[in-house]
Length: 302
Image 1 (cartoon, rainbow, N blue to C red):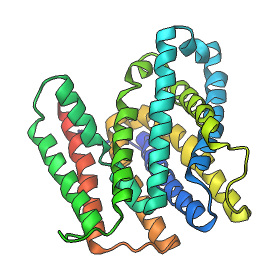
Image 2 (image 1 turned 90 degrees about the vertical axis):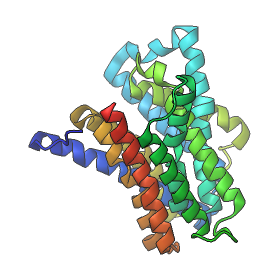
Image 3 (image 1 turned 180 degrees about the vertical axis):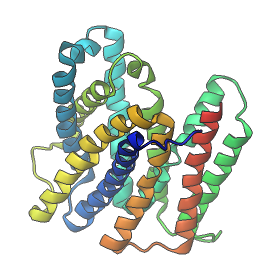
Image 4 (image 1 turned 60 degrees about the horizontal axis):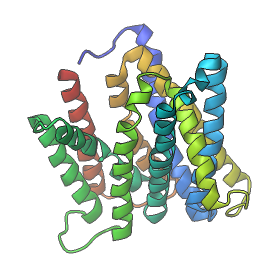
């Protein structure tokens, strides 16, 4: 993989890293809302998807005009979009935030980063091909990193609850589905349209169960700031920056730089919310991040 070195590529590098940092910090903001302000995870997910989805749809309409609605014209595409909204967006958002509420932003974000391993496993099964050596190495790194993260190397006890582990792994599976399912739509329609409509559909559907019109938690300036950050910086701007960086430095390198996200979540959780993160946690984090690096570089090589 040739690294972008031209000065024209610098804005792309900054945008890719910034999007990852914004995503990571949004996880810590969610932890703050759950622990300090007693905001319900399902309530937060609903409003995040509705508001961010509406903003992205408006952006898509403003930039693409009528094309933004083309995704609804064919029933086949409409069904795929609804499934993406319900089984992709709702699943990945809720499992991630609920995992945060059971553990912390750092652990939940790192566990979710096992998702690419499930993507590799899916395509290996679909294409009836054994994984290549690099993918086996990535699997080993992911399993070892996860083991250290949840046990600190001890075979006798867990350092986070079994429920937190379950929802963290479920979050990784949801991320894998979220990555694979909309590929067909993204070949035809813009990411802003697919993601925006998916969020809006998922948020409206989820609202039938979460009753978002009833305010959740204790609200003050801190609550408003954290909530606004999650919607604006942690969703809309992060998404826009990432897409823009892909056009400048390419999808492979942009995705690789997004490995900064778990580090951003870990550092902000440690220094802002005083989350305990030990040597084994950092080693486990490093191994899981190496998983992303190995898979990204092996994909580029192929």
